[in-house]
Amino acid sequence: MIRKLCTILLLAAFVAPAWAQQTRGDKEGVVFAPRKGQWQVSLVLGNSGQSYNDNVSYLLPKYTNTEGSIGLPNGGTDESGNLNGYLNISGLNDNSLINIAGLQAKYFVSDCWDINFSLGMNISITPKKDYLEGDYESVPDIIIPAQKYVNAQVTNNWYVSVGSNRYFKTSNPRIHPYIGAVAGFQMARIETTEPYTGKTYSDGEDEDSEEGLPEHVYLAAGKAGQMFGIKGAAVAGLEYCLAKGMIVGLELQPVAYRYDVIQICPKGFDKYSIGPHHIKLFVLAVLKLGFRF
Image 1 (cartoon, rainbow, N blue to C red):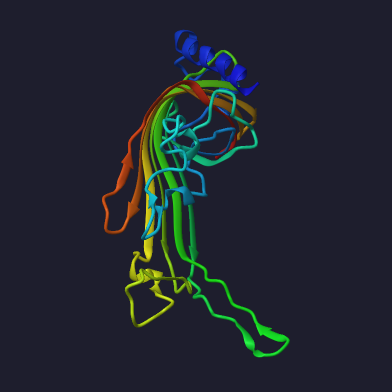
Image 2 (tube, one colour):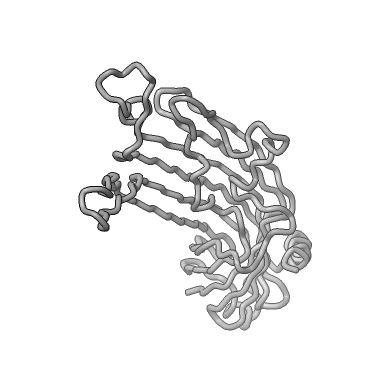
């Protein structure tokens, strides 16, 4: 539904400059039109792909000192070329109004031009906890349970975008189409450090210990992975003033380009890196609810 509405919006936005009134219009039009020096803050709904998924554990290398490989979960399969799920890039039918992209702020440098920007960030820090061995034999019928370890983990996920739009006045003072462009950058990173786990490995050559040595003797304690992307897009939108200072709008990106880099970073080895390109047409439709002041 939202894609159909935004297709109509796109046509209206491109036709608007041909019949738009370049003057301020009548008294009623001045009331609802954006003015130089005003701010507009909007809640953006329906956009998926503005930022990466919060769960990026698939970026961590998964191997042991005896086996394993480095790559994404679908690596080495027929589906290995499909990276959209990792990059949080939706298909044509996946957009939904329940996807909250965040807030967008605009400042009008003139009655017709704005500068807009968006920013979002999510940082999570988990401290490590060492494994504590249990005691199952010292006291009959009473055990001291072991305590499982917890990896130290730091994740951050953020995005920023900056753009500018040209607004047009119409014969209806409440309706204001616009066209413009936007550029953005987004990044996600995860890094873990393994504490004492209680796990050991024996290669059969260690005479000092029958159980072997702790695993961290053979493996690096830290693991990391990250991905970042840059994007640029043309923008077309239409805003309707419900009341003075209260805006509802539809916006889409008729043409958008995005380049991402996915990196899995095992310590002591070369980075595993992939760099996919994406070009999209008539997608990323959003609904905006905003206030202008």
